[in-house]
Figure 1: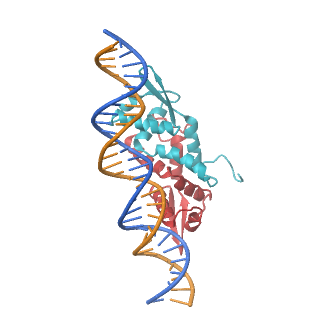
Figure 2: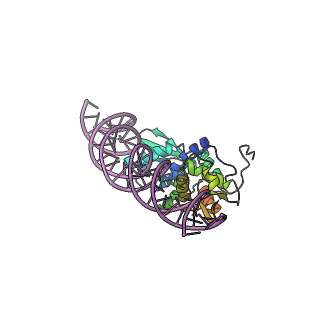
Length: 107
Length: 107
DNA sequence: TCCTTGGTTAGACGAATGTCTAAACAGACA
DNA sequence: TGTCTGTTTAGACATTCGTCTAACCAAGGA
């Protein structure tokens, strides 16, 4: 859980991450990617899991990527996406109910 | 970490929570409230921590409340807010990078 | 070179968001 | 009752968001 008030700067940065997660499509995209621990998922596979257009999926993937939650790489014809665990972990810790004695939380 | 794809329904519900967290003001409000573990914070105290109007703060608090992240109670003249740990914990778990489950969590 | 497939970018448009001012509601007190 | 303080609600307005279609870029194969 949050143990001390956030600075405005920290709040802006963290809010960017949560904002990216605040859409059902992006959350499902992330779950499809993250479900493959350490693995990668082709965009074509992600697109086929929705009834939305490829352009819309690409847009959502870009939002996730700009937020630093996922990263990608083109490999020949296809583009593969994977999650960035450190970024997800940072957001998770903020909400975690178990005390995390990290980051010199003075108090 | 997310270990399996989310259903559309689950994604919609969870996205509501993350969306509420996706604003710097709301994130700072939550941190101000959550920093008092089990405690409560008066709206007047929250409002004075920002340069925004009381109406705007009230609006953001309502967003957090509708999302189930905080709850409140009027007590005489003042209104007090507190966090709902269970809700924060649910969101945290989804992103948690250190899953308690070892391998083979089939389902 | 041209064509085909996979994926992204650009532009448009209705819906939702964040902020404000003004007004209303709730309680305390003279 | 009236008035003051604390908080929420209503309405307005510019900005941002999610989606689409159309166009473009990247790679492979004839």
